[in-house]
Image: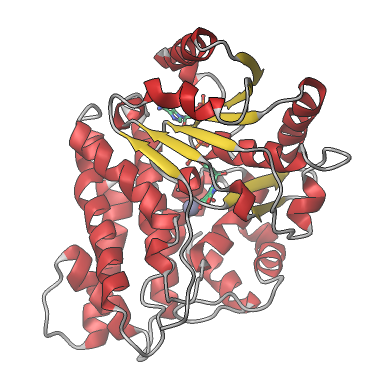
Length: 390
Ligand code: NZQ
Ligand code: ZN
């Protein structure tokens, strides 16, 4: 296992009755708040009015960046940065899912630059150490953005979707009330659940030769919880236990506690970001299509034991099979989870995606060299995996 540093200063307020503490958390940074939110779900659910009441009741001045797109655009983050500069904003408050939080991070970083443009930071791979403070109110269990150092920003003009990272981007506080996810449509619940599952799987079994039981068994526990509770949340959207399990799993999956000592890898994520960048598809759905094909593609004598272990530990596949047979059963379980349990469509052709851009997408995905993972992937490998998803 590798040496590691674990440092996550995010203060999580989890549960039904925590939002009332938001004003005191924001007040630590000042009184001018930029609220960043999406296309209107928080207005329909009543959360917007509640936030307004809370902030105004505490004497805060609220500014707004509304209409953040799923797969947030750099141009939207730049609009937010301009608002920060014009109004002397003290803290950026994201209210929503990963897109609102990621955009808020882009805003917070760009607001500290001279020209207020986030894209040079994103494209230049700048590690952001200076940004306005970000606070998150989470409404969708999925990306882990509420507790991680990353925001994923899309440049629609260049078909690029890239992570912006930095210690200054970890939210200073995250408010996680599972009840706020009751209104999620089934499709977003399914996509979010698969996203969480894949965040863990992308880094599973990467501690090298030595077994790091503490981390691997935590990874397995989180994947098991997602597999157990996602169907419950789909059947009973207002089941608190299900929503709470998914929400905390979302935060644990990417706050780095589950990749301590491992080689951080994001094989499926690197490929999926290309799909979203070219075709604007929902992130979790892209992952669901890719993941079983990726496992099938990388299955060989070396990888079989790891894939088989996923089957036994997470899906209850029987012990004692030959590794390849066990691994095949595990892959069937992953497909079954994605396409039967969660009910997600299984092919790219469902979105009208053909192989027109596979080569370019694969080159982008491998821009920094082969993608690391259980088996590293070259440009040709990525093209082959996209082809398996058609
Ligand atoms: O925009 P609104 O109207 O709010 O509606 C959203 C949106 O249409 C809706 N929604 C969210 N919470 C809701 C709700 N509808 C009803 N009730 C609620 N409680 O759901 C839709 C999707 O929301 P979005 O925020 O886009 O979803 P998600 O949380 O999955 O975020 C996806 C983005 O995060 C990036 C993805 O690539 C994608 O751009 N990721 C960010 C990561 C990170 N920061 O570390 C890592 C991830 O791997 C991922 O790449
Ligand atoms: Zn993801």
